[in-house]
Length: 443
View 1 (cartoon, rainbow, N blue to C red):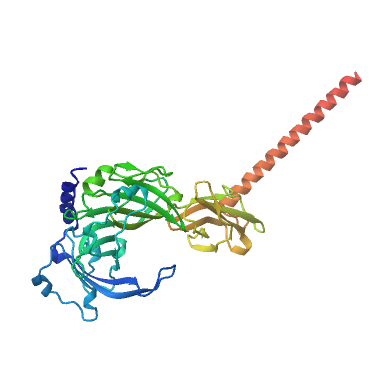
View 2: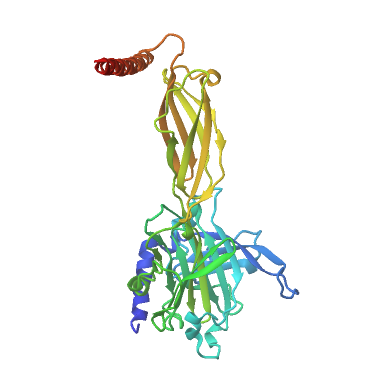
């Protein structure tokens, strides 16, 4: 850990090369500056104000000459124009730099940031000293940015000398995969990386990483690592890990889930703690598993005009629970038509968190116009893809008999003929035996 300074120096170069940054390639970000309205006390509902803001971004420090070349728009207050130095080019991603004239733009919010000591156990060692460092006596800001097309989510902490509008990025936490989809049972990587300014006094003071899960108001600690003391916090979560080597060499704090399960669906928050500083990003994981389909009875029995045959389609093992089931019929002419949803049952929850659902359909050839039969198909439309199950349906006794009808009737006739011959032979044999027995008794 004594080599952490050189490691971060190497990482800043790698980070810059990865993003292909240059001062001219960094975007001008339009943001909202959001803060509490002055004169209001604390509480659960604190009124907020928001103002238009703008960030000019460079990877190198600004000079009077470079600042004079910039022309901020007149509709933004000069107090909300910021000239940001971003040595690692964390803001200089293509996902934050839309084509000129594009309607879609990154979402950006700036908030005042108040440095404070962390209260969680795995980060408390970062602020053992009760004294507040002189370094913290400055203007601090946090910036949250969402890139185009869910390509990037970014959270930066910036420091500016008091009353200055030239902040510098001190801590950056980002994810290149804000939304992740996975099938059941597959390993999952939730991307999260961080960078610390090597020239900052906090870069060699240690760090902590935390992954926390949230879903529908419930949360749990998935993983926490105390980088200062090189130890993991105890959690009840199993099958979750991070790459310690990558954590120190490149700031790779990605969470690895060995085998995805339905219970893993939700939002994961990656937090990086420094002494008195914190930045975090959220990554959404959705487990999507398409259904398996079966049609019952299998195979379908012969259908006679006037008879009603009830068939069942069972969809099982799917997640999430949203599913559309419909029936289709394809006749001998190859034309398909919908038979509707049928009678759809409610969802059933399996022990692994997946769902099952069924649909039954009453087949009446005289009402549905099934002709001599065809293919009955159950179609399941799901977020994981469309699935189909098909069964052959044969209708006999419709108008002139087809070859299939003839063969079926011949088969039935042969069976009946065989049964009649068998019964006739049985009774004949029985009568002969009785006659012989009577003759012997007479003698």
